[in-house]
Image 1 (spheres, rainbow, N blue to C red):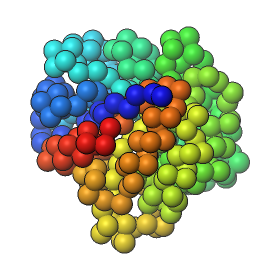
Image 2 (tube, one colour):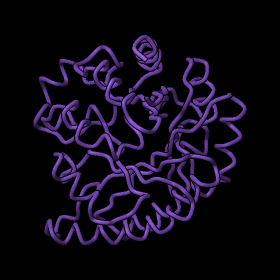
Image 3 (cartoon, rainbow, N blue to C red):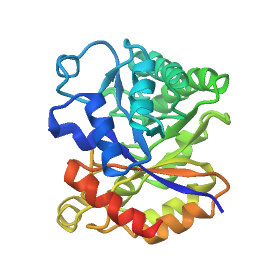
Image 4 (tube, rainbow, N blue to C red):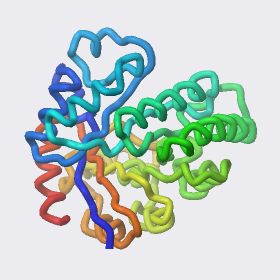
Amino acid sequence: MSNVYIGVNMEFVRHADKSFEWGVEKAAELGYEYVEPMVHWGRELLSEAGYFHSVSMLDDPYRIKRACEKAGIKLSGLSGHSTLCKPEISTEYLKQAIRFAAECGAPVVNTDEGPKPVWTTEEEDHVLMRYVLKEAAAVAESRGIMIGLEPHQQYSQHPDGLDRIYELVDSDAIGINFDTGNSYLSGHDPVEWLEGVKDRLVHLHAKDISVQQSEDERGKVTGTPVGCACGEGVIDWKKVIEICKGLSRDIVFSVECGTIEQAERSISHLKGLV
């Protein structure tokens, strides 16, 4: 039986207008064992001013490592979503995120296919994605970093589509970052879908969906940035935890919610089940 650990995606401090370091300290204060930072290319005004949590990959990766060590918290992975369908963006972005992860100590880099170009066909998009993943996997394999493919966009919104992307490249460095909320909103049973990918699971986005959002959006969207507090929505967390505890590897549940208050309620609920 494997262990299930509870972490939080740094999106929980998105609206707090604070720095990355502040957010890491807050996550530790709430009792989280892991954080999942978001990284970006170049420089971005709000992050540079300390009003947003994202970290530039032009910074020293040890900035992340030092912040986590100071707070007594670990890294579950990096949020490195990089539009796999657009290789002019994602090839170097994802390769850099993998190198960054290796240096700061994050075992997984999470991504998805992203919005597609308006002029490409489905077949062309899969060729483009194969190119990106082949290049990224070569960098990841030699560093022991996993690439977590997430159900989030037009092709990965159903199990067969996610499997097709996963099968584009034969690499031990490619796995699944399952998102409970995105899978539900796209119209599927997240527990059933999780059963189908559990042997490839390397990370899990613990995202709950409110009854109101479910009524408004289910079957109409492919995903959502963040959900409600875990335990206040439609996801069967007891069953999700049961599946993950039966795996051969430990899994971190990275809570994806939109406020500090939701993060606090989420960890309280999940700890009671784990």
